[in-house]
Image (tube, rainbow, N blue to C red):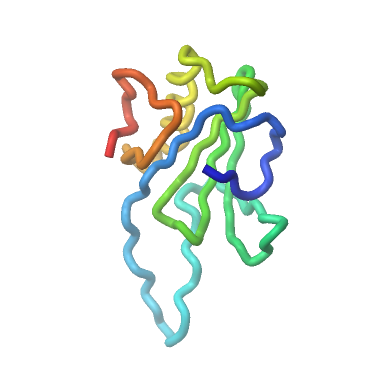
Length: 136
């Protein structure tokens, strides 16, 4: 999964989740023309320019936790997907199994205003009792 925009944390991505967002109604056009670009699904997402393509509309949010960072990313070109990354100072391995539930719970808390979202893909997947995010 390529990371979009520029992260404040320079730690590598050691875990990620792709969540499918609910379909949005089509915008009501009062005048003829091109529909406006969609707004981000969460108010906490802020513009995060992509240096290699200034036309791209990417929004992100980063939250620090003890020893790692959760980063949410939403790309207006793919409005049905919300991505979450876990960035941590593990340069030679993935997120330890004991940390996976903490990462998933942090993501669940951040996306709570959207309700339970289906999981499109994830690495690593947690064990039983994911509590709030659902398998597709």
